[in-house]
Image (cartoon, rainbow, N blue to C red; front, top):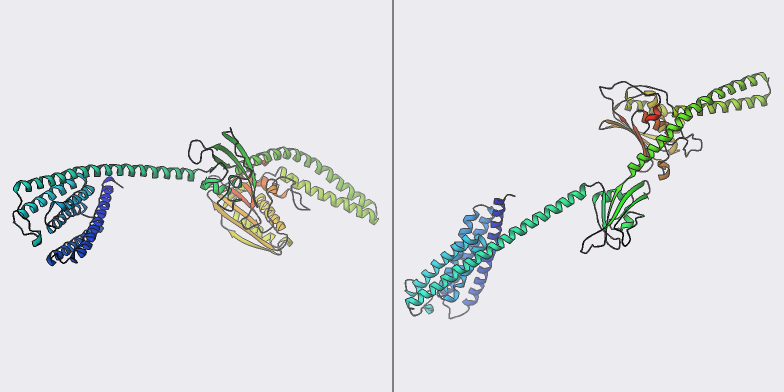
Length: 553
């Protein structure tokens, strides 16, 4: 609000208070007139005149109130009210016989004018009051006008007495104007200073709130007993998975928190907090609250969610292990396949030369079957450790997922599974065969997790410059411990699993410069999210590297 508008609002507020004060004076005068009318010695015309003054004051007050509601002509209304108050005071002085005893009502008008218009109003009211009082005093003494009632008729006073009375009252009026205007000016300055301080405090409070609301780190303060005093919005959001009520102690908000002991100013701490569905890593800095006041000796806690950073660290470690394991496994698997093929051929030849001995044939079939199973396992492991180079082209991820769903839907694992599809077109650069294997593994893994009747939700959407594939099941979900190992090779919770399905998914997605994340869904069950870069017009065909394990991240 600009200064001129602020001054107008302040003037309107003062005029409203002046109007209310006049209304109170009129009501008091009205009550006094009623009491006075019960006195038989008071003539009826005087009583009627007092009632008339009260009625005029009430009507004028009502008119001023209506004008003030419009918010216009405030200066003119202020001068009109000051003039009316002086006239009202003159009427009261005249009706009371024009004596000096009731001249104080002019002083009330001067004070009111000073409060409304400061020095200008006080001088105007004092001047007008002086003219009216002097005119009444001289006119009544010289019999130029009759008194309001016959009993008020008094002997004519000497001119010097009248002049002295007028001079004393006029001096009182202007002295009061000076004093009242000075006090009004001081009040105005203090009010402006207070308003400025309030604005500064309000701006500071807003800035403080904005800073605390914008900081991504959690900030909490606690007293000496560990009771929470304040927690910012980011702090509540970080602790939301395990906080169920707003009123907590510091160690309930941050389980495992250690507050610094006597003589310690600040400590650094890391916490690992497990909730029903997630595990979070938090980094904290706990310091003592300095300064005096009611919260002196308390603690301020600044904490951050390090879960994503810890996940990146785990990914980096996994990549290092997989890189080393991939190089070793590729050579080992290659070396194992040749002896297995030789053993299988030799056993088949021995079985053919041994005649019709059923026991020997059965043993030969067992050896051949086990050899083929080992060969498949080695083949899968080799596919994980060093996926074959692929030719990347533009692939509609939604179409590929839909085709894969049509194929797997007829399998025995999907007989009682309700599949919900939400597929939107999203083109990515990928090897269609490898990407189909990713989708196949995720779908089969979800169906095995349901292990019976359940629901499988599959969606393909676009988010920014990425295509997002989500596969969510209604199974038992993933424990916090399993979430950190689920993409490790040979880690499996299934009795007949090899632990290479999800590891292969991770390797292929990473080779396509994407990411895959496992988590528990909001409604229970596990949710796997694959993010791949969208295809661009500038880069429509890409040759995938032969050693894709180097790109796992």
